Image (cartoon, rainbow, N blue to C red; front, side, top):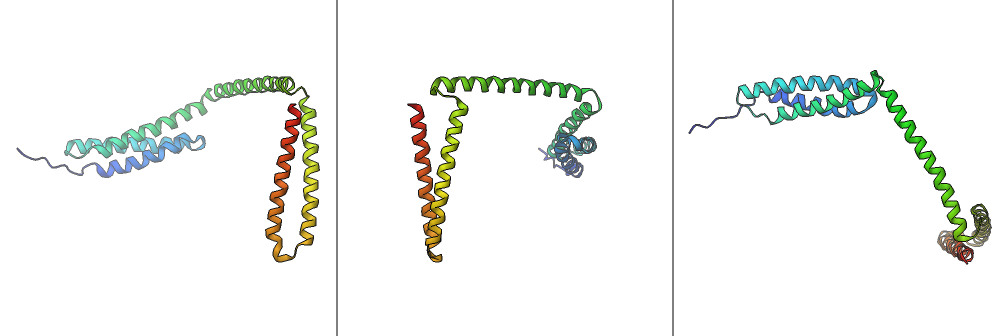
Length: 190
């Protein structure tokens, strides 16, 4: 039984075609670089096909050349799709599809807003705007109080103690704020 040795015929062309094919894919996907994707993809297809032919004739490995051919075809196809969309009326159709989709989303947003406000009024028995205004007033008052407390605390503390005490004061102020907001929501629910 004779062993057949694999040669490296076509491997250089296969590697070059693979590199060009790998470059053709992102270039073919990105709209402004699809022309480069077409060029790289077509050169990669040619190099991959020639390399595959050489490898088959000389009993060489065909893995890299097959991969080069496949990847180059994929990159070329992506670029070709963009080419057809840009240089034909395809982009107008795409724009119409996007417009219809955006209009559908806008209609759904309006319906959702109305439904949310209706359910909020039914659940809490209050107007959403009035509740938000009350909450905003409460937040403003609390923040003003916290700000005044922090200013007083900063003025009274010596420089070396300011950092630690300021952090603790901010934590307490935050806890008080959260508790007050929580109490306000509980009162509104009743």
